[in-house]
Length: 148
Image (cartoon, rainbow, N blue to C red; front, top):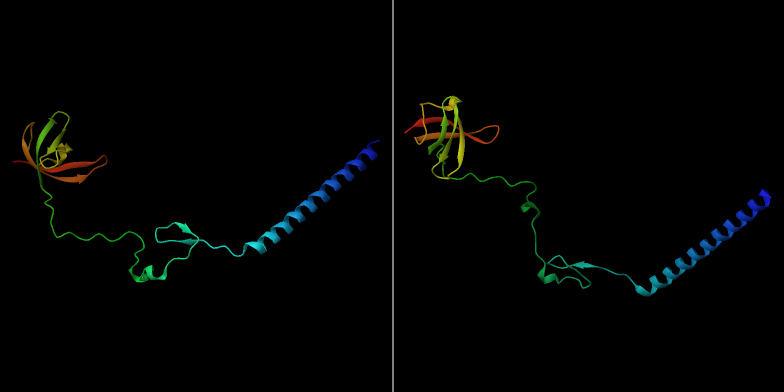
């Protein structure tokens, strides 16, 4: 019985395949017929970047010189003003036993870390100081600190 059942399944599968082929062929012929009626379709991009079905006006075309296009990051222009590296501030906190503190910049009101190794003069809280900034591991550090 297994043989007859197997033959029956094969016949049914072949009929299904044949039906699929016929449907596919019909769809293909329908697409061909519709394609002949439609003609060629185009999409244009207008000056604002929108898709339209009308071609752009050649009078509004902008001439672009390829040499003027800059690829990458533009170079920074050097400013003529020289920034004074010496800043003035006030010692907000300084612990002499631990050897560090914080200085508040008079211009920007930012706090900068200060280590005892960056001191020129001994400082205490509320002293007015001059300092320079260097980038540290966790931000800007005050170095070459002098009491005013």
